[in-house]
Image (cartoon, rainbow, N blue to C red):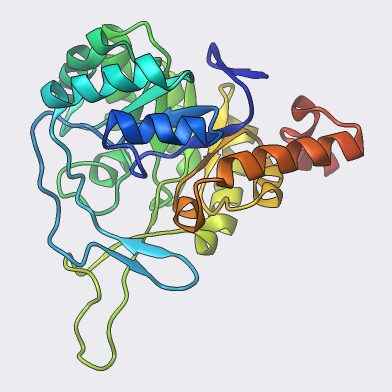
Amino acid sequence: MIEITGLKLRNPTILAAGIMGTTGASLVRVAKEGAAAVVTKSIGPQPEDGHSNPSMVNLGYGFLNAMGLPNPSYPDFSAELTIAKKEAGVPVIVSIFGGDAEEFATVAEGLADAGPDAFELNVSCPHAQGYGASIGCDACAVEGITARVCDVTDLPVWVKLTPNVTDIVSIGEAAQRGGADAVVAINTVRAMAIDIHSGYPLLGNRYGGLSGQAVKPVAIKCVYDLYAALDIPVIGVGGVSGWEDAVEMMMAGASAVQIGSAVYDGMDVFRNVADGIDSFLSEKGWSIGEITGLAHRRN
């Protein structure tokens, strides 16, 4: 059992936003498969259809996606959140987005009655015009959005950061100044692929975000830098598909890890990663606390 921002987790694995998080039933299913907490699909102030297909491509070494934040908006999602809260048996974190601080606050207030355990602020989606990374690259905007959401809720507030910046630490510090209880690093890396036989981009949106094993070294470096600079927990995400990846992320400074793309290969990934971590710690005679940030103490 571990505790992060007041949430008790039975193991260090969490479902990442955007994967299996659209319905209450899917969130419950992930929890039953071993995830210690679940994060919903990002929910915004109004319904969004998202980008045209193809919106996701398996490149073999990772996934390229440009979903465009499709969601039913917060009034319609409340019922799904209520189901997840009632049946999942684990903390349910709601990912929210907006075009400015007031929209973030509106969504947070609108979902509060459904009883989420925490909010994750999506200021990092790389392919939604006017949302996500277009806001998350601005430290002042991140600080203001975080502070505004903290004004309207007493729940833990996590801020999910984009790697598509020159200095992710400055954005993490802005979130911390705004009152964030934790940061989540990283969202997908802005990327593109082209079909050489036709010359067309593979995605309907032309470009999108890269996830999966290809981005793990980027995520590790971001987590490492944020852990060294911040006084709040860092939750690592990006390329975790096995227990070894999770341990590496934790040694870089992650208090827990989120898993997204690896669900493609099987829902048992959460249980497998958690069991693998337990076996590794038992073999070494270490605790989770001892491996968190271990790489910083090896200098």
